[in-house]
Length: 286
Image: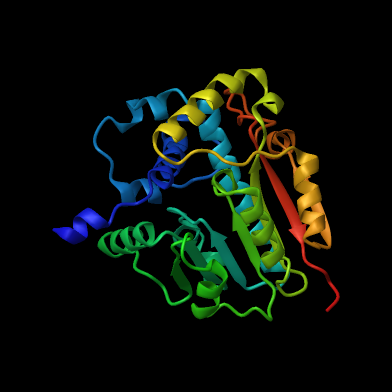
């Protein structure tokens, strides 16, 4: 009984997975991302689609599926170039390893997140028959008391070989100092490694339509005891990456994401304007 109480996934991870599942259920094809495995793991109560955080957040749902599609395109592209390590920092209920076995089977995948979320996920993967393949490594980290990098190395990550490391839904909750430290650590990865990291814009840089929702989200986060901490302009993100000594840096804006995945849609689905991506590469010279 105590195990049942302890094994609870992070609420944000659950909401994100439900959004991905809802996309397939109610948005028009072609789908930006087809992911109902997270929905299967969660097994929500009947009528979950009518929850306010599902029903009135269409643009956020679009952002989430586009985010997942973008980072998956990055790992697929880099794996074709010969990179065979994939690190998901703040993995939540990511299901790439289950959905894209054609690619995942060639990779060593390291999912880093809070111990409770990963323990719950492992239990549900086993209960639903997916299991935990040998190339999928769960790296539980209490970020307040231990180093994610040290735990990653203990899990078998090879720091001498290139990797793709992705980080979404995390920087919003970190101090600027913690983000700088994380970037500098990632910049020490082997040459030709790639980082895809999501950052969040200040409210005054959002499109007007998204500002009320952002205000509500910030209020809810404060009341839940997980306040949003860090927002950055694109130029500030580039400065942080360049200061961390990445070799090549690029900002992927909401406009870029819309052009990639939404330009031919006729249902009006489009992502919210609050999130941007840093795409950065470590030096090609040793």
